[in-house]
Length: 393
Image (cartoon, rainbow, N blue to C red; front, side, top):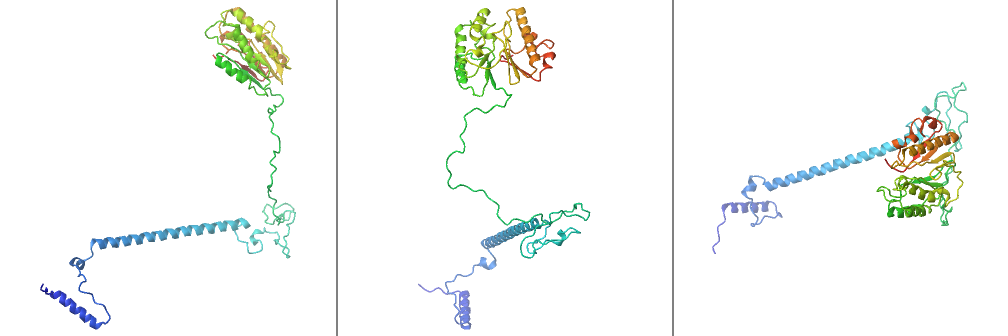
């Protein structure tokens, strides 16, 4: 294959290289295989070159900003440390002067007219300040604060808490299971009512009776021991069942009559008879106590009153439901009002009154402003009067 003649441009380049080799021995010459500069490179930078320069500039800018941020952070830390050290020195002498190396208090700390004192007596031991207060020469203590210590600081460390390395493992005291002591003059009693209406409530009442706290002095049931809403016949077995449940109480239990077991029974007299046979003076049927009980004559089975720790407790026959005989109804309420007011006048102490019904116009003889238990002639003699009831309006 015939040799291709070389271009004049290539020959001229080889001549220049040969001339350069002669002028500078030892210098390597590019071979013929070296790529020649393209026309595009000779004319200016390419887009890739521009992008590479921009990347280098951006990286340099980021590095510069990071260095600036680091410098600022270091400056802030150093400034904080310097401020903390300065505050510590201010706390040492109270004036902001650093006296840690001076060995003596600042001259500005000595009030005018007083003699500065040195913290040492020359032998290296601390001296105590004079016991007499600094005065202005008249014998009256000066209002200017003195900076002389009033006593020598101790050099012995304060006693610290010590912990046993061999605990005994035994309790320091035996825990008590007794009820919390009740302050004298405080009566602790509990009130229940309108229960049981259903077999489920009867079972729950058994649980409650067995869980009465031991600090309870007595319980009052404020009436409705059976469900009388549907005017069912009143059965003796219902009264006997409730009697059996309430007898589980560990403390005396007073029982207030409700309308469900009396005037809401189809036979009112029969309901009253069953009540009287089972629940008259009920608080003494299963329990012994020291309460001095008094009762309203003619209504002994449904009323009670006693004084305990400076408080008067009164139980009344105050039922809701139907009014069978209006005159007998009003007379019963009026008699109880007179009896209650008489008790309040006799004792003149805080009074708690128990009844079953929510007061309505049917109970006016007992609650009327002029003659009832809340009349002026009754309430002006007692500081407090509380009415505890069961029935809702």
